[in-house]
Length: 172
Picture 1: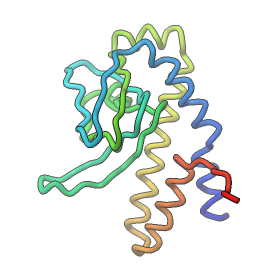
Picture 2: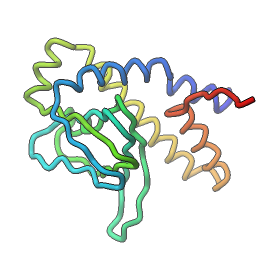
Picture 3: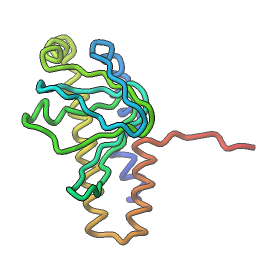
């Protein structure tokens, strides 16, 4: 089985688009917050939430005390963050930064409960987001352990295409 077919099955573009559309429809019920390019994503609230990216592009990463970072995900409109803390409790060690001017819709736990009552499919999309992120991190870990730098770069580019890529028409 080729790497492309593995990623094609793991990151089903049609399913991802369905998830993004669902979350963008739900986003109108949240509190909007804007972030400028390179701004740290900070929600600054003690309540749990799910944030939906409505505009822009956000990177999520982990860092050490010396400022070295490891980018985990790139999130585009219709994708979420905060779901691990919302469903699992506790807090998240993952940080965020706007790659370009961005906007998120924040839906706090009390509002989420009422949305979930009327939209139980939301659980399916939250689970899809979490499993997608788990797969991304698993593939990154596999690359770091088993591949050389060229192999890691190649897999990263292929994975990025299947997660975010859009086909463009060839210029004539």
